[in-house]
Length: 391
Image (cartoon, rainbow, N blue to C red; front, side, top):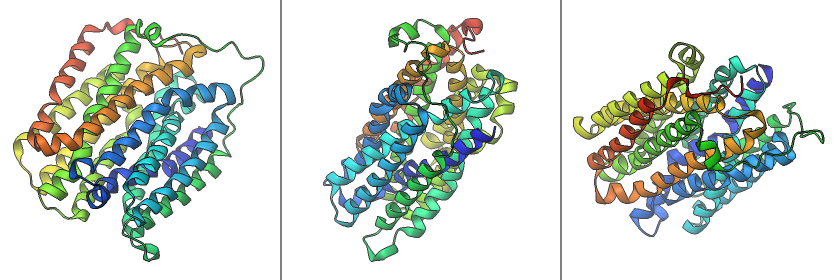
């Protein structure tokens, strides 16, 4: 597990990119975007960067190995963070959008850390390895907003410029940590790369359920989370600090359960975790849509939203890993992440317009049909659908 913990540290450092963008991009956008409806565009483009790079990242790692790809991507993210800082200091919204996209592109590689960790341990410890790596993002959830808030006025630059200068340094540290991981390079004796298409993988019921649960977990979470800073800060008049507290609570909800995930996987199984995540998401929507707009309503709803995401996403990841052959892993993982983060990008892009045109209550309620479809798919997919290809 030593190598897994090295990946966990790298995950914590690299994931600060997303955490800082989530915490501050919407607020920054309200100040420099040409229209309030475009305030969340940088964050949405960062998610689009994750989605568009998911399959290329997996195929690149298949060709040159995980370690070189991880290190180079972290260094590119460091340069992109400096670009974000420059964009904020000069109120250049177009540059902010472009550099946010590249920070998101790095996250496509970071998301592969969980698969790398699962390959470093025996099959019966795959769930433990995946959840351990996600503990790194728990550290980022605690460190990122705090560091970003502390550094926002550093250097005498425009507010929040310093946050991204510090982020650049964290990405460099991530590259240094990743350089210490003894991941094997591809061998000349390796088996030929898989040529399967996405539709071939989708013929496996367990894989199909895993992809749908994973993309739904991210779509619902991103849709509600992206709109939260605008609803709180712009519509309901809460301060930036209060909004940051709620987003931090949400991020803790996303990653704190990872401390118990190995136990949960053993007790509930991946299907049970998906079901529990569905219930948590429905509870979040109930609080957000019908209880009220006070600070504690936002706090509790976003905290529960994070927990629901964690249960669904980890359950889907473990289920996915049981439904492809080792030779197919890069394509299977790449297609999955393309679907998951493509749905997140779409949800994030729609969130800004939805909060402005539909309002907070309706925005939450329209997520319910997607959750209902996941529940239906979970019920219709046979329990023994997973062939345990990786066992």
